[in-house]
Length: 66
Length: 258
Image (cartoon, rainbow over all chains, first blue to last red; front, side, top):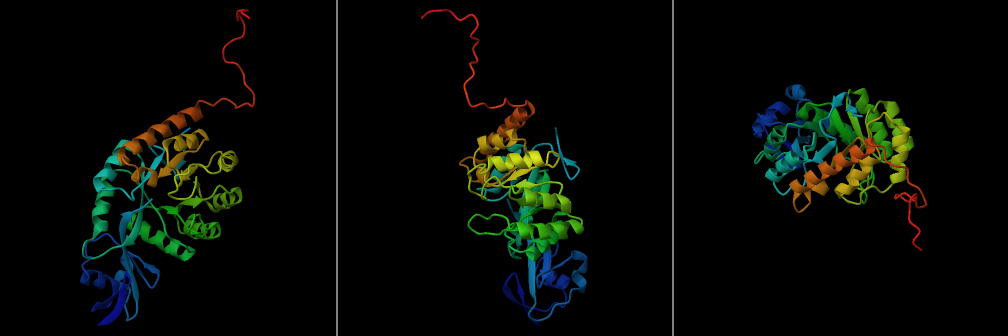
């Protein structure tokens, strides 16, 4: 288990990589963009983006904007 | 003359934001009545529970308009560049409305950060719409980097003040006759949009003036009509203003009645 932050919220996760985390947290099939520790992680790289305790994950989705 | 935005011709010179509407239905109605050709959108954190972003994305896709993601809220080059990369993946477009905010009270762009971020993003293949001031030197720098569109502010974001520096905007237009100019931010009334188009601007980007109106859809249509009027007036070549009066009714043939 790893202690990470997802959108600034503490999460105790089992996943070893970002792709698995998205499934674990219920984001499968959702249109989202991701970053880990401030660095963009493209969709095709999520499976190889390994997670460790203390990582800060951002999961962003389309929102209203001006 | 119709200008293209990175090779794309737009059906309308109105670009409309998607924030602050009372409801999704009113947002859709505003887009329908404005006939806007572009919708600006952003990226924000998504909760896994309600997934509000997914519903919003479906709504935006149904509008059948070009998508222009923004980097709103970014205060650093790194934030803006990372956000742009995330937006390109989610929205499947290389267009990015590049905002690097430099000051909180006016939300005016950090022009130094803007230029740095534009350089990085253009090298990465983005088509950058830089939210900038009317400063000619900055505009020159942005164009030299490869920006094919400039988006000078009219006034601070959300202020509704209109065009604060008409002289500066006129100079920008004269200095860059071939670069599409989009007035972004600060408009509150359709008459201000008409004025911008009369100055020769190529498009208008609005959000708050429409979304926060008592009747957003009606205001959207009013802006569309004003923009059309301003564009028509600009192409009709307005008269030169003069300091003194010049009678419009002929003096010839006037009776001597005194």
